[in-house]
Image 1: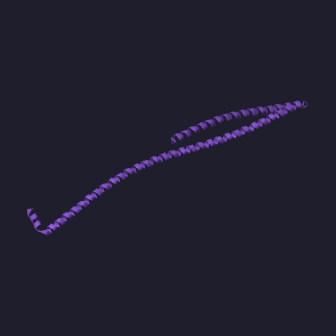
Image 2: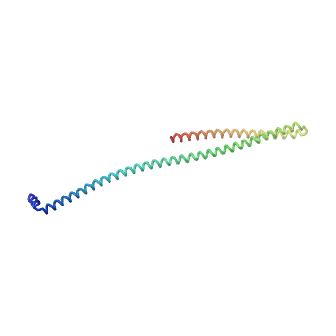
Length: 180
């Protein structure tokens, strides 16, 4: 070994080649160290991206579930609104029918009054007028019964409408409470 060192010191060419070899070796080691550091940095970045992507995927899934819930709720609300409109139309039709029946009832009352006046005015046709009077009386009772039936029906429909309105108000209050 001592001989090799002495030979190395005496031969400048060998010393020059040795120093170049040491310099090349240092450059190679430097490149390897820098590459290893870059690989470690990229590895950490890749892990961080995987974690971030997983978190974003979970967040997107959560938002999609909430969107589906809101779509279902919206569909239910539209259906209830359509049912409410139907009930409102039926109530309007019932009110129109009631008014028509009330007009018929008023007309029947007028007709009955006319018949009574004729009855008092003409005693010659008393028997015929009594028969017409009984007929008018029967129609009058039928009209009263129908009127009572319609009043009962209207009262039931009004109660139903009030219940629907209360239900709609509670649904709206719940929705407003959820919004805030």
